[in-house]
Image (cartoon, rainbow, N blue to C red; front, side, top):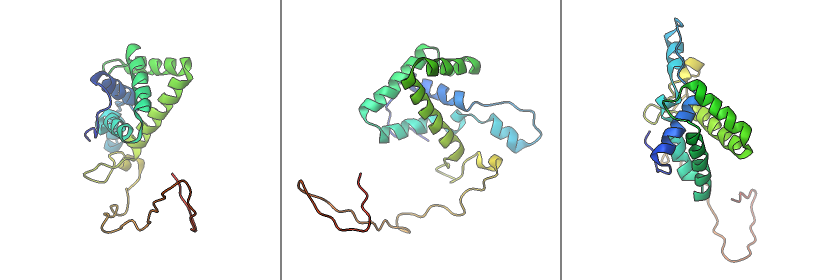
Length: 175
Protein backbone atom coordinates (compact mmCIF):
# COMPACT_ATOMS: atom_id res chain seq x y z
CA UNK A 1 0.00 0.00 0.00
CA UNK A 2 1.40 3.37 -0.95
CA UNK A 3 1.33 6.26 1.47
CA UNK A 4 -1.76 8.32 0.69
CA UNK A 5 -0.22 11.55 1.92
CA UNK A 6 3.34 12.02 3.08
CA UNK A 7 3.52 13.65 6.49
CA UNK A 8 6.92 12.38 7.66
CA UNK A 9 10.41 12.91 6.30
CA UNK A 10 12.53 9.92 5.26
CA UNK A 11 14.19 9.53 8.67
CA UNK A 12 10.86 9.67 10.50
CA UNK A 13 9.37 7.16 8.05
CA UNK A 14 12.31 4.77 8.56
CA UNK A 15 11.96 5.20 12.33
CA UNK A 16 8.24 4.39 12.14
CA UNK A 17 9.03 1.29 10.08
CA UNK A 18 11.61 0.18 12.66
CA UNK A 19 9.16 0.85 15.49
CA UNK A 20 6.40 -1.19 13.83
CA UNK A 21 8.89 -4.02 13.23
CA UNK A 22 9.82 -3.82 16.91
CA UNK A 23 6.20 -4.45 17.86
CA UNK A 24 5.75 -7.17 15.19
CA UNK A 25 9.15 -8.61 14.27
CA UNK A 26 9.84 -11.49 11.95
CA UNK A 27 10.64 -14.59 13.99
CA UNK A 28 12.47 -17.55 12.49
CA UNK A 29 10.91 -20.87 13.44
CA UNK A 30 11.67 -24.49 12.70
CA UNK A 31 8.06 -25.56 13.05
CA UNK A 32 6.90 -28.21 10.62
CA UNK A 33 3.71 -26.30 9.84
CA UNK A 34 4.35 -24.08 6.79
CA UNK A 35 1.43 -21.76 7.61
CA UNK A 36 2.77 -21.20 11.12
CA UNK A 37 6.33 -20.75 9.83
CA UNK A 38 5.22 -18.13 7.28
CA UNK A 39 3.11 -16.36 9.91
CA UNK A 40 6.01 -16.13 12.36
CA UNK A 41 8.41 -15.02 9.62
CA UNK A 42 6.10 -12.14 8.62
CA UNK A 43 6.92 -8.69 10.06
CA UNK A 44 4.98 -5.45 10.08
CA UNK A 45 7.14 -4.29 7.15
CA UNK A 46 5.93 -7.23 5.05
CA UNK A 47 2.38 -5.83 5.24
CA UNK A 48 3.52 -2.19 4.89
CA UNK A 49 2.01 -1.32 8.26
CA UNK A 50 4.08 1.86 8.71
CA UNK A 51 2.88 3.24 5.37
CA UNK A 52 -0.72 2.46 6.33
CA UNK A 53 -0.26 4.23 9.67
CA UNK A 54 1.23 7.29 7.98
CA UNK A 55 -1.70 7.41 5.57
CA UNK A 56 -4.20 7.14 8.42
CA UNK A 57 -2.49 9.89 10.41
CA UNK A 58 -2.42 12.15 7.35
CA UNK A 59 -6.18 11.73 6.93
CA UNK A 60 -7.26 11.93 10.56
CA UNK A 61 -4.89 14.17 12.51
CA UNK A 62 -4.34 17.90 12.71
CA UNK A 63 -0.94 19.36 11.78
CA UNK A 64 -0.17 19.87 15.49
CA UNK A 65 -0.99 16.24 16.27
CA UNK A 66 1.15 15.05 13.36
CA UNK A 67 3.98 17.25 14.64
CA UNK A 68 3.68 15.51 18.01
CA UNK A 69 4.03 12.07 16.41
CA UNK A 70 6.92 13.35 14.28
CA UNK A 71 8.58 14.61 17.47
CA UNK A 72 8.22 11.17 19.03
CA UNK A 73 9.78 9.59 15.94
CA UNK A 74 12.63 12.13 16.03
CA UNK A 75 13.29 11.32 19.70
CA UNK A 76 13.31 7.59 18.94
CA UNK A 77 15.74 8.16 16.04
CA UNK A 78 18.04 10.14 18.35
CA UNK A 79 18.08 7.12 20.68
CA UNK A 80 19.11 4.84 17.80
CA UNK A 81 15.79 3.47 16.53
CA UNK A 82 16.52 2.49 12.93
CA UNK A 83 15.76 -0.47 10.65
CA UNK A 84 19.31 -1.83 11.00
CA UNK A 85 19.30 -1.63 14.82
CA UNK A 86 19.01 -5.11 16.36
CA UNK A 87 15.58 -6.03 17.75
CA UNK A 88 16.86 -6.27 21.33
CA UNK A 89 18.27 -2.73 21.17
CA UNK A 90 15.08 -1.37 19.58
CA UNK A 91 13.05 -3.01 22.34
CA UNK A 92 15.23 -1.37 25.00
CA UNK A 93 14.79 2.01 23.31
CA UNK A 94 11.00 1.60 23.45
CA UNK A 95 11.10 0.57 27.12
CA UNK A 96 13.37 3.50 27.96
CA UNK A 97 11.16 6.03 26.20
CA UNK A 98 8.03 4.61 27.86
CA UNK A 99 9.62 4.88 31.29
CA UNK A 100 11.03 8.37 30.76
CA UNK A 101 8.03 10.30 29.44
CA UNK A 102 4.27 9.79 29.97
CA UNK A 103 3.48 11.50 26.65
CA UNK A 104 5.93 9.24 24.83
CA UNK A 105 4.37 6.24 26.58
CA UNK A 106 0.93 7.27 25.33
CA UNK A 107 2.21 7.83 21.80
CA UNK A 108 4.03 4.50 21.74
CA UNK A 109 0.93 2.72 23.04
CA UNK A 110 -1.16 4.26 20.27
CA UNK A 111 1.35 3.32 17.55
CA UNK A 112 1.52 -0.21 18.96
CA UNK A 113 -2.27 -0.48 18.88
CA UNK A 114 -2.42 0.69 15.27
CA UNK A 115 0.39 -1.69 14.35
CA UNK A 116 -1.45 -4.65 15.84
CA UNK A 117 -4.78 -3.62 14.32
CA UNK A 118 -3.35 -3.31 10.83
CA UNK A 119 -1.05 -6.33 11.01
CA UNK A 120 -3.70 -8.74 12.23
CA UNK A 121 -6.89 -7.18 10.94
CA UNK A 122 -6.51 -5.05 7.83
CA UNK A 123 -7.41 -6.81 4.59
CA UNK A 124 -5.26 -6.46 1.50
CA UNK A 125 -6.78 -3.98 -0.95
CA UNK A 126 -6.45 -6.44 -3.85
CA UNK A 127 -7.57 -9.71 -2.27
CA UNK A 128 -9.79 -8.57 0.58
CA UNK A 129 -7.89 -10.95 2.87
CA UNK A 130 -5.18 -10.50 5.47
CA UNK A 131 -2.13 -12.74 5.07
CA UNK A 132 -2.29 -13.62 8.79
CA UNK A 133 -5.89 -14.79 8.92
CA UNK A 134 -5.19 -18.38 7.84
CA UNK A 135 -2.69 -18.88 10.67
CA UNK A 136 -5.19 -17.42 13.14
CA UNK A 137 -7.98 -19.70 11.90
CA UNK A 138 -10.09 -16.82 10.59
CA UNK A 139 -11.52 -17.52 7.14
CA UNK A 140 -12.25 -13.86 6.43
CA UNK A 141 -15.57 -12.24 5.66
CA UNK A 142 -18.25 -14.36 3.97
CA UNK A 143 -18.50 -11.84 1.15
CA UNK A 144 -16.80 -8.64 0.11
CA UNK A 145 -18.16 -5.35 1.37
CA UNK A 146 -20.90 -3.99 -0.87
CA UNK A 147 -20.15 -1.12 -3.20
CA UNK A 148 -21.76 2.29 -2.61
CA UNK A 149 -24.14 1.49 -5.49
CA UNK A 150 -25.16 -1.81 -3.90
CA UNK A 151 -25.63 -0.30 -0.43
CA UNK A 152 -26.19 3.43 -0.74
CA UNK A 153 -26.06 5.55 2.39
CA UNK A 154 -29.63 6.52 3.22
CA UNK A 155 -29.13 8.72 6.26
CA UNK A 156 -29.81 12.31 5.32
CA UNK A 157 -27.83 15.13 6.86
CA UNK A 158 -29.46 18.34 8.04
CA UNK A 159 -27.67 21.63 7.50
CA UNK A 160 -28.11 24.01 10.40
CA UNK A 161 -27.73 27.71 9.74
CA UNK A 162 -27.66 30.53 12.23
CA UNK A 163 -26.90 30.57 15.93
CA UNK A 164 -29.88 28.44 16.99
CA UNK A 165 -31.96 25.66 15.55
CA UNK A 166 -34.65 23.33 16.81
CA UNK A 167 -34.52 19.81 15.51
CA UNK A 168 -37.15 17.12 15.85
CA UNK A 169 -35.89 13.57 15.45
CA UNK A 170 -35.69 10.11 16.96
CA UNK A 171 -31.89 10.15 17.12
CA UNK A 172 -29.41 12.98 16.79
CA UNK A 173 -25.73 12.35 16.10
CA UNK A 174 -23.60 15.45 16.55
CA UNK A 175 -19.99 15.68 15.59
